[in-house]
Length: 114
Image 1 (cartoon, rainbow, N blue to C red):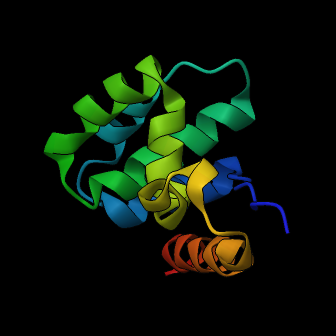
Image 2: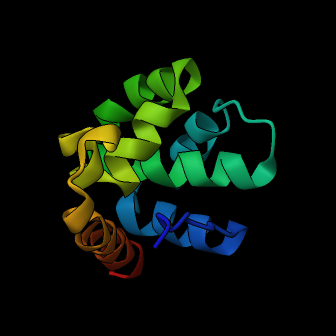
């Protein structure tokens, strides 16, 4: 099993913004617009990761956007693959890989769909 990759549509990103920051929708959109990416799909994915890591705390958004623009892999890793991040991607025991990938994806999917 390969690690699943999040596909975040414009509609889903809008739903996440409204759910996570219902009183600051325009402000969050402006902040997320500062995220750099070579693709629209990447920008949406990185934006969702920032929202997840902010955990409803508006004060975290600016720092997460800066960190994302420095190295988006850190933000995506912590948001989408927290167990893999804890283990270190190259250090996961072979017999635990499927379980960890599955648990990471279940946790992220639960957050997306809550």
